[in-house]
Image (cartoon, rainbow, N blue to C red):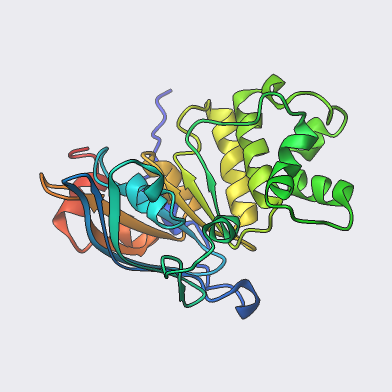
Length: 281
């Protein structure tokens, strides 16, 4: 018997997500980018990007390789300046204060705006427990009960039930997906307001990817999340807002941003529609 099946389109996936409003004032007033430009030496990599990231939401940055998504992400917690010859212009406001203002303590900024990288990077010589608490030690932060914090962060990262009986095992012994969730738990231990994620599932199998996406959905009620992804279905599944980047032969630019449902179902720019429908990229 022949069965007719209707595949899920990106717009139908996005439309199933509950429309989320911004979080409470207790979460801060969010992260704002104003007129961001970025250079690598003489190369103008990113031009005039302005965006708001509302508390308690997930924003996906999509677009072809080389269009400036990850560069933009790194400007949001001053990691761009780690690269030799890199420069930037514009403002990044966290709770209304420019993180690039003279005299700003960069270490404190990176505690408030954490980062999870494309490749899991647990500290290989540390145990699972030591990995989670490593940020506290490096930042010289104190906590009343480390055991409670350890369990809380591993639980929030969706890993506690899998590792609670082997916390003294080295982090490198975990699977790739578990290592990535361990890195998320490590980032959460210092109580960030914003979590940046640069293609966190690109090296993972579908099952591990699903667990990371479930973790993102769970965390988004208490942490503002910005994720770079090349997976259009992932953007449709996990994000509340989406921004499309494109270079068109020049510096990367943000072509269009809006609710994820709008970007996938009713984009305003033809280039956005061409990308999300798979006509290029």
